[in-house]
Image (cartoon, rainbow, N blue to C red; front, side, top):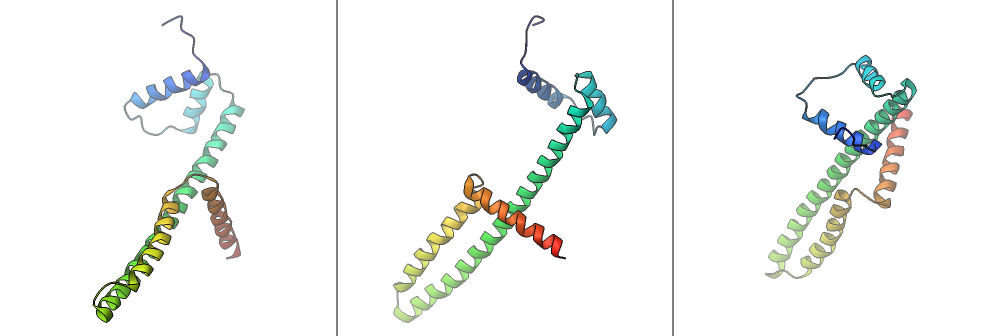
Length: 147
């Protein structure tokens, strides 16, 4: 193994695994991070850039999680309205005619729409998701800066 050569990606993966195997060391201070980077031959500028990229990624990830909670909350409200209204309509249909007839069309038609909304809510990839996420971000930005 002493003569082995590793690509940058291999080194990164090996070090990530080694760090993960370490007992919890707690949190690191910024000077400790700078010291580790220096030991690995990473310049202060490269570390600064990587740290800013990581912070931007963390912020984006946090926003995406908040966006997912927002989407799920709206979907569950839609699902609740669907259940309440259709329970009423099915009950009305049963009481008026002794069986299910016209309410099944409403139940199935609206149910298809709810199912599609559910699919979109839990499908977090693709152009449609990205557009909806950016639209949500812009709406939040306007709300924060209008107050």
